[in-house]
Amino acid sequence: MTLITKVILILLLGFIFFSLGSALYYLVRDKDNSTRAVKALTWRIGLSLLLFVILMVAFAMGWIVPHQVW
Image (cartoon, rainbow, N blue to C red; front, side, top):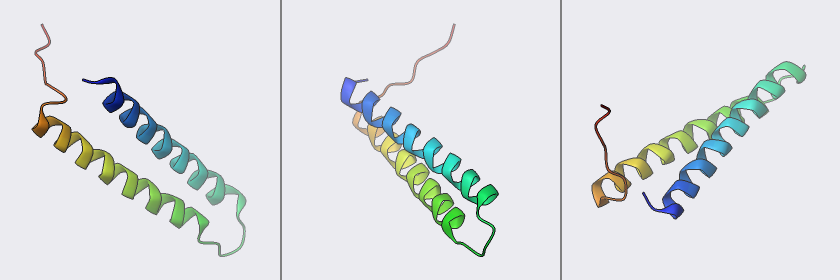
């Protein structure tokens, strides 16, 4: 796996976790009918789908290769 692929995957995972954390923060702290938690969770879902697509494309292009665990 190339370095750029690793960096992209790690950054996307970081953004996903940040979005999940901000959604939790907004869920706990916002007392009114704010939609910030829903928007943060929507971003998380979109980023997760993007990560899945990138993984599928990287596998199809041969950038990542599965290996056996022995």
